[in-house]
Image (cartoon, helix red, strand yellow):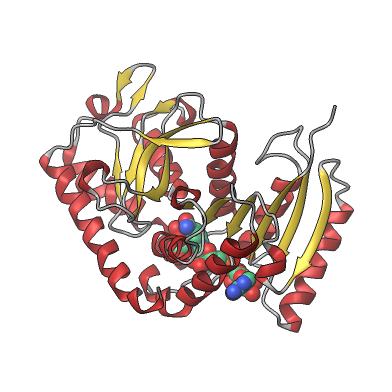
Length: 328
Ligand SMILES: NC(=O)C1=CN([C@@H]2O[C@H](COP(=O)(O)OP(=O)(O)OC[C@H]3O[C@@H](n4cnc5c(N)ncnc54)[C@H](O)[C@@H]3O)[C@@H](O)[C@H]2O)C=CC1
Ligand SMILES: O=C([O-])CC(=O)C(=O)O
């Protein structure tokens, strides 16, 4: 018997990431090849954006995806989020050359108070929310705080692109196959302060750290490369990453919904005090996922270098959080 369709809301649906994301959701890459989906798409109430959204919907129709059980176009989050089981909050202003993601806070923060309130009012009580719009951790925090009737754990931020970037850099450095790297994580904020940590990573059971054995490369090449990869892409393309961001969003939601089979993945999730991160801060952690729930990997040793990196990214997040107090 075929499964009942689930409702997937995507904001910023006519933007760059939306264009790389929707077709993959509709083809079953996110929630499984047996799971029908109804897409509930949100764009701003602006003629150009709504027209662009119409064009994207025409293309979705023209793909004749067997799993696509319905498509709705909206300009009001209260309609777009009605009964939604999954919400991918992509719609927000991207940065341009010379900006940091935190510079977007003033432009984007209000989007996430309004959308958090709308989710609170009309979404499924089990909705799984992924915030992609930057600065993603703080926007997820804002949405979570604006939705007091929904469980805080349902609000997550995207650190998966950083995780995937880190895996790719390690594979290139040591000649690993990227898919063979296990137990990698990225701690903290989706910003250059993130701490990509391969101390626990293995390939075929062998330590990645011991194989590479180069702390100078870790501190002075690997971390800055992963941390500043978004800016490098903006400099090269003139636009921020889109296909790789959409891919990471698919990875994040797929693993959350369908399970990571015991493997570690990185998600930005509200802390419950793990590793000394104050409760409520949306922080990149290693997690495993099963039965639609994520669980932070606990008990990992944090050495002095790692603690310094974690303190730095935490301090940045606390600064961002202070800056949005007035909105909450
Ligand atoms: N967390 C991550 O790893 C990454 C995050 N991003 C962020 O994702 C966001 C979207 O990026 P792009 O798709 O490249 O931008 P874009 O400018 O191409 O598309 C954004 C779309 O969102 C729409 N939008 C704006 N406000 C909205 C609202 N209140 N409700 C619904 N839609 C709204 C716009 O009309 C536009 O069509 C940016 O903030 C970008 O910085 C991008 C890459 C990676
Ligand atoms: O760098 C940006 O502004 C877009 C982004 O978040 C990324 O590519 O990681």
